[in-house]
Structure formats: C-alpha cells, structure tokens
Length: 86
Image (tube, rainbow, N blue to C red; front, side, top):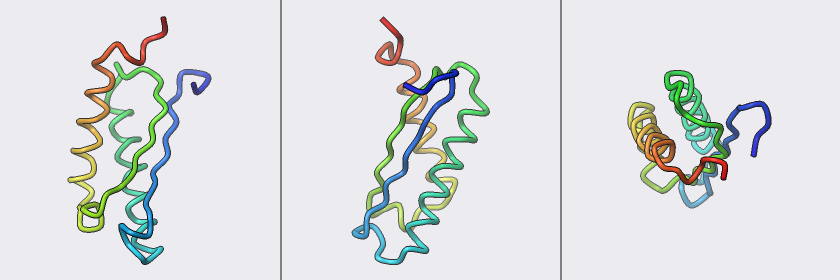
C-alpha cells in the first residue's frame, strides 16, 4: 500500500492493442491523466493501488471515453469496503 495517503497506478498497454509505441504511450498518458484528474476532483477516495490494462478498444478511444471509464471504476472501488483497513 502506498505510504502517506497517496495512490499509485500503472497503465499497461500491450503490442496487441497497438503495434506502434507512439500510440501505446498516448494511451498510457491519457490513462494516467484521467486517474490524476479524477483523484484531484474526488476527496472521498482512499489511497489506492491501481493497475489498468488497456484493451484493443483503447486505441480508438478519446480522452473523454477513458476519463469516463476510469472514473466509473474508481467510484465503484471507493464505494466498496474492500479497500478499507481491517
């Protein structure tokens, strides 16, 4: 678990999603920025360790699509008791 109350994230984009490194890096940047923007806007999210694996549809997705999908996932995770300390 990250120390100091901060979240940690990893975005994985394989060559099956896009054979071009430029496109894979773009997807990773969009993923990281969507998580950062969502965590900045939401104050009730506990510290999280997140791993995102892009699917083939991510190659044609806009930032708004990625932001909406990641936001929904983070909201779903933060609403559960799975991440609360015992």
